[in-house]
Length: 182
Image 1 (cartoon, rainbow, N blue to C red):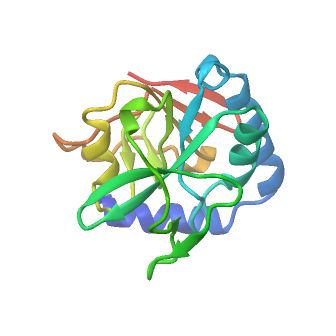
Image 2 (image 1 turned 45 degrees about the vertical axis):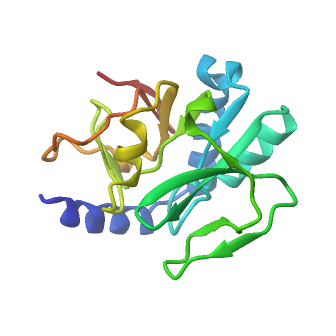
């Protein structure tokens, strides 16, 4: 299967997912038990999009624990990160992605302890299929913090063609537990 077919397959799988809230809570419980989460003073995370695992509860938990939260914004062909506070205004892109507005304070990803990396599909080696823009692969190439993905079991696939620029994550958290990659 090519990456576009994988994206469609996973979209169909997630649209049919039963007991979503229960599975999301299991993912959150596994994530919050990770040392990478517990020790992080700052996290980078996307605002969930379409039928992905909801990230709002993770953001709320981070704020409750006093962690700094940063979210991405695509500016031309670059993805940059901005501080996200409970009062931060958001704008919606033409793709329906919520991003910080122009007043948000930029943060360097290199200053962030934990990057929660989104994706449509993952291999157990940590490679991911995203939406096809390559934004995360480019920013993760120079990132030295911890990388964790959250995904439903249905998003784990046996294999796909890995390209030279693909950047694997270190851990994948699913409702069944934590996959240690590489």
